[in-house]
View 1 (cartoon, rainbow, N blue to C red):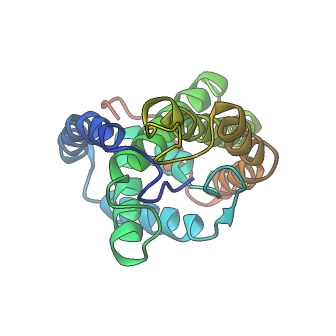
View 2 (view 1 turned 30 degrees about the vertical axis):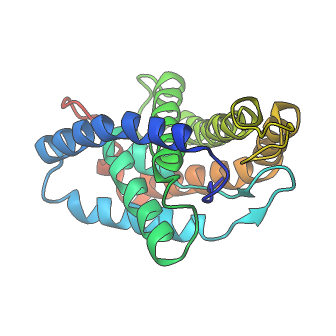
Length: 228
């Protein structure tokens, strides 16, 4: 799902940077206000977990790569804004140090994986697990469904972004300048692989960690009144 340099046109990259800059500002303010000192190590662990799990990626014909993200788990534990910060840190390090994802595409990658994914996953989890006890199996099921669905939604956004590039960037002879695949190829390629393969990795990992925390550290799953 990492978008490399050269897949998106300059205007598309600029648009997503413009979208993410205020979102990063809001996220930093909310996290600074609401995150307790005891939760800071969890945020660091969440960023590290997301970084590691995203390194296991597989090329997708007609797309970029497929992989889990781990963002829904962080969102469940710390809230979607904190997850946005954690995943952003992981994505920036991957792009700058490991060349995984382009520098020009950091805004787009963060929009898909550090904004769409954690927020979608968090609210899907909240809707399914609504008012259930901390030790309820419904929370485990909710976490799995949220992980699977949120990854697919983020992948669909990425596929859509790829697919619209041929519509906007062409030479006089009709040759595409950036991503060569239209929506009919890019969207099914990205969405299909994440629905059938990588979404299940996200679902299983998220559900198993929530199940473990229910037994070992249930306080991490308790509701908090603060805006998360």
